[in-house]
Structure formats: structure tokens, C-alpha cells
Amino acid sequence: MSSSTPAPYVLILIDLAMEAGVSRAALLRGSSLEAIDLSAIGARVSDDDFRILVENTLQLTGDTTLGLRLGQRLNLSAHAVLGQAFMTCRNLEEVIQLFERYYQVLAPELTLEFHRTPERMAIRAPNAEVYLPIAFGLECITAAIRNTLSGLLGDSQFPLRLEFPYPAPNYVAVYHEVLGDDVHFDCEIASWSFPSELLATALPSSNPALRQLYEAECARLLADLSDSATIGDQTRNLLRKLEGQYPQMPQVATMLNMSPRTYRRRLTQEGIGFQDLLDNVRAEHATRHLKENRLPIASIAYHLGFNDPSNFRRAYRRWTGTTPGAVRKNASASNS
Image (tube, rainbow, N blue to C red; front, top):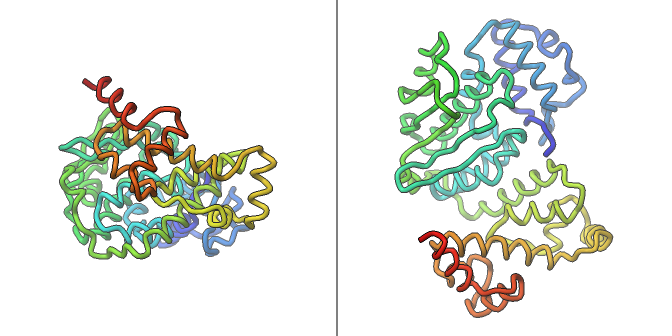
């Protein structure tokens, strides 16, 4: 994954520092940011340059609360296409699903784990140490999550439990001012959680008609950021992110910034066909749903684009050499 940061985050941080009286030239010293058009649509900044900017800003402003302040300003528009995609969702559950698929568009180095139980929906960051300094990174992410949820739901008091893997800083009062009262320190891992029942919360900005459009753009951007060496790998990654939609070959070519002819030729050179890639990914998705044992087989069939469950059963046997029923039966036996 190409390690870079969206330019809007950089512009907002520069504005914060300049409001504190620091010159732009001093902020950018030691980086290559002067040579980059940060206002260009889709512009990104290398993480090395972003770290230099953060270090310069912390040193020159002396503001230890800078991560929290930056996160407060990272609203839906700052998240660019992913923020637009969030706004099209019908409810909070769809937002979390989108975030799980595409969060690396915003933070390529970060690894997040998503855990849902009947009681809690939790997002954890096991490798938060990728951020230097760690407090700045987690403060920024946490305040941005709080701010984004407030913007989506129109609810600044959303019950978000926040856990940080370090001791309470001497400016803990600012944490409570920005993040609320349910803040905890010296925890095992960075985590953000809320009651699972709130996943059904409807979004006032919902626009399902645009959902597919924005999600396809998120998938294309994620594929662009991928370090995958082959077009086949990029295609798999793209199709995995577009579960339930499964675009045709010309659409995938466009998402990967190629003509259909060039795309087909590149796949041929790699010795693989588009249909094989599509079938492999659909088999992955089907197997996961079958093992989770929640959706009826007929629902899984429709989710994968089959109008007739019997056609799905035949296709799944062709893909995997076994039947959906056998996979489900084995999964149930393993879990019992």
C-alpha cells in the first residue's frame, strides 16, 4: 500500500499552525511540500513529508493539543470521496461497512480491526505505533471519528467509548472538552466503541442512488494506492471491495485507469482471465457468508448476483468442488 496522506489533512494542519502565528515557510522546512499542488483534486502527500510537517508544527507552536484540534476540523468534506460515500448511506451500519473496506484511503499505514457483538461495535488499532508521535496520531483519528459521526448523525453526544494505550496526558481536560466524558487511558489497545443497537440509526443525508457511484470511486482510489505488482492482484483487491456489485470488465478497466483493450492485454500477459478473477472473488465472498451461518443460502445467492439459488449452487460447486450446504454443515459442526 502506497504510504501517503490526503492533501486536505495537510492543508488544514497548515492553516491551524498559521493561525498560531507560524510562517508557512517555517512549517514546510525540510519537506518537499512546496513543490506539490496541495489544492489539486485527489492530491496526496508522502507520509515522510507529513511527519516532517507534524514535527515542525508541534515544535513551532508548542501546542501539545494539536492532534485533537486537527481532528476537530477533519469533517466529511476533508475525507473527500469517502466522506461523500458516508453521506449516501442509509444508516450507521452501512457507514461502518464502508469505513472497514476503505479506511486505508485515508490512512494507508494503519491497521484496524472491526469487532461486533450483540452488545458492542468496536474498532481497534493494534498498530497505532505507526504514528509518530503516537498521541498526536490517535488524538487526531479519535477527534476526526467523533466529528464525522456528529456530522453524519447530527448528534454531538453520540455515546462513543474511547480507549488510549498510554497514560493520561497533563492536558486531559482538553480530551474531555473535545471527545466527551467516556475517555479511558492505560488501556491495552486503542479502541473506539459504541452500543451495537445504534448501528440501525438512520442518516438524515442518506442518498442510496449515489452510493454505488461513490463506492466505486473509493475502490478505484484504493486500487491506485496498492503496491500490487500485477493487474490480477489489483483486480482481486478491487472486486473484494465491491462485494455485491461485481462490475463488468470494461468498468473495472476504467476504475484502474486503463482502456478495456489494454486491460485485457495485461491480464492475458499475466495468464489469467477476468471471469476467473471474478469467480474466485465471488467464491471467497460466498464461502465467508456460508461459514458465518447467518444468511439463508437463497439470500447469499441473491447477494452474489444470482436470481435462482439453484444456479448459485451449481456455480459454487464449479468454483470450489463442493456444495454450499456442505460448507455450511461443516462450519456448524466446527462451531458446536
